[in-house]
Image 1 (spheres, rainbow, N blue to C red):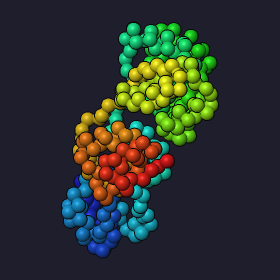
Image 2 (image 1 turned 180 degrees about the vertical axis):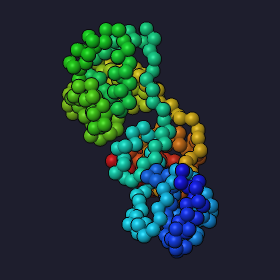
Image 3 (image 1 turned 45 degrees about the vertical axis):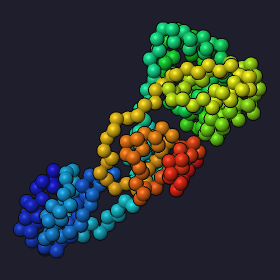
Image 4 (image 1 turned 120 degrees about the vertical axis):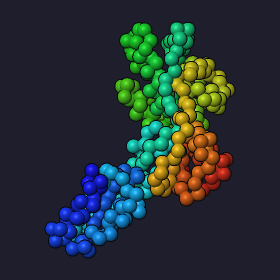
Length: 296
């Protein structure tokens, strides 16, 4: 890369008659969160590079052209969930997932239990896009999947939020009930406003993490609820935080908050803290981060 030949480049330009005061700008790791930029002249640039410890890849720009450079003033946010692109409107997003999502592998007995529950269900509820993706992933591996596809179109789906609704639409299914309030309480309210659930059979494919509210609330109104663990939500391996300037952090669920605090102990005071949904915000506030702000 040009940076490793900087001395030769400077010497060549000086030999060709370029003044010592000619402006030089070097951008290392351009467009990335760890971008570094320094400005100098042909007489100072080598020492500046050495002082700043710049490393390739880098772009070297020489001459008055650098006056047209407009620095990227967007904030850099650490995103602790699994869908970072939807937050790019906030600034530069550095993906740093604190959770690992993967479908479970069901044995034969568990598959039969899921099929029985599916065939008799009046309502299928999905509280996240992970639940939708994992549910269809598991169904795709069960024998007789073509029959299931036909039955799926006749099922009533109730989901939390637009992201979950879109995940369902990928499979050409429209949710009958969409909770705009993206909480278990919001979904309960949406379902009970839509229909009477007493005596209804509800299939609840969900994660391995305990959260009994929705099941108990539905049962309390007379519904027959079957929970099936369809995906695992686990903590990602511990690693050092990225060595770049970070302005803020985005938490997308209580587990992303808990896992971050498990690994790093605290959230830097200088970071802006953003939370998706009231439950995530409450988790942060209970941990002492009362200045956290909601994204929803």
